[in-house]
Amino acid sequence: MTKKRSSTTSFSANNICGGVGDAHFLKWTTADILGVPLHHPIPCFFAACLLFFMGVEYTLTMIPPMAAPFDLGFAATTTLHRLLAARPALNTLLAGLNTVFVAMQTAYILWTWLIEGRPRATISAMFMFTCRGILGYATQLPLPEGFLGSGADFPVGNVSFFLFYSGHVAASVIASLDMKRMQRWELAYAFDTLNVLQVIRLLSTRGHYTIDLAVGVGAGILFDYLAGQYVESKITQGKLCNGTTNGALCDSPK
Image 1 (cartoon, one colour):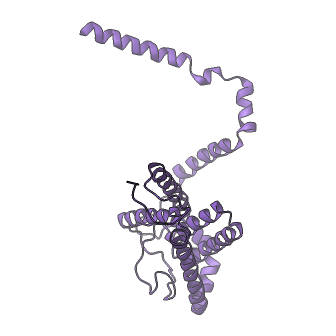
Image 2: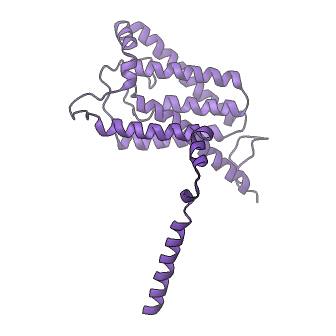
């Protein structure tokens, strides 16, 4: 047994040494190295960003525990925040328009399933809001200083809500992605434009931190992809209607 173990150890060591000797980077030529920025500018840009933000992170003065968080989006919308704070009627009007946009998102997502028989967007929204509820409860962020609430905003009536992450933004992304799949380009671009305006308004009213909105975009993309994988897997298994006849979630054929 001892000899067998020694033989195995020696074999593994030889493999490791051989692997290092055949390492990919040892085969690089000067032309290969100089050609990287030319042929792969995007990864090079991200590599430069990595080094830059490492320098920023390791030299940054941390925000004290009792101080308000620093938010770049808040700093960029200071003028708009002052304008809305001075004009409550305008703030209420914009909140009402934003609520209409939320209703549009909801109506479209449900329409794709109930009327068109395509459940992907609806499943994506359910995935997204479930994860948002878990993360929002797990880390309950403080309400931003200077928050401008409105009875016309959604959730209606200034009730409590999770800050991380923005369901407004994520649902809009989900709807827009579905529109693009169906080549409803004008409607998709309209939703994207309204989503940008929604982001500006939410920052201006301090309704969300910048990170809530940025992650909301990523969440919309992620859960749309995951819902697509789920739908495709169920179609392959014969447990989901393919969307050509109706939108029901069907049992597997008997």
